[in-house]
Amino acid sequence: MKNLILIARVVFGVWMLANGVNHFFVHLYPEPVGHEPLAIQLLTAFQHSRLYDVAMAMELVAGILILAGAIAPVALCVIAPVNVVAVYWALVLDHQPLLTLLAVLALALNGALMLAYIDYYKDMLQRRALSLGETAGPADWNRLFAWSTGRTSRMTYIKALVPLVLAAAFYTFLAKTGRNGEWVLATLLYPAFVLVAGRLHDMNVTGWVLLAPGLLDAVALWLHFFPTGNGGLSANVTIGAIAYAVSVAFLLWGLVAKGSGEANRFGEPAAA
Image (tube, rainbow, N blue to C red; front, side):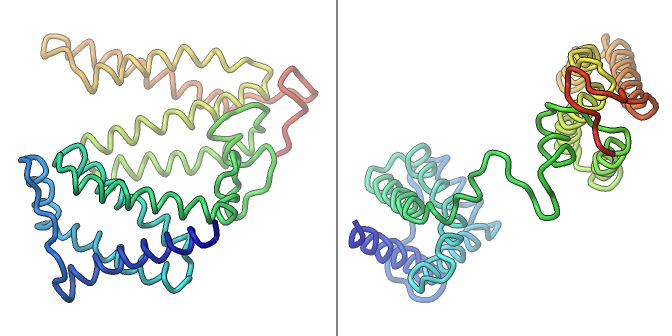
């Protein structure tokens, strides 16, 4: 097994290095150009945008690091998306058997080597990983923004609400990216609802009451992203305003209401 891993590492490292050298320095073999219209269009866009150069630079550096044994697990992670895109381009868009075989083989070697380094990824694969500065408890990211299973004190709620408001303000006033920014703002609803749910638990109120603003927000978002036409514009705006008002009311409820001072069905009193 050790010899097979060593062979795979050398083959993959040389392959990535050769692709980079072939692109930037010495023309060793012809680069793919595509045969099907979509494959040609995508590859042409990559070339004109210089994104193809970025991919080849990643292969060049990854090949060097893998062969040198320097942060090889990181290099394998970084280069994996490039190989995934290569498989998609060859298999789905270009339909060329040889190119598809080579792309799949490269991705397979990439994955096999990552499995060989699995011990280095174990900390990354934890279900509830803590970021820098976090400690396990009621105030970590997962409990506040991902899945509320306990109680959130009012002070913790206020502290957690600040980054959400700042993120929303960033996409509203600074990163004005049109529809993309609106979709990002919509995704912020999930951590906001989780945060409010934890606050409701502290007040001995079930988080299921959030179905009311949740359904209103869902309808308002649907009408916003998929409007029914000019005739329904007024109704769309009205529903959106109602959904916004109800959601803000729940946020304010979490700010002003006091938590239960003793244990309840959701756990012990939350620490500030």
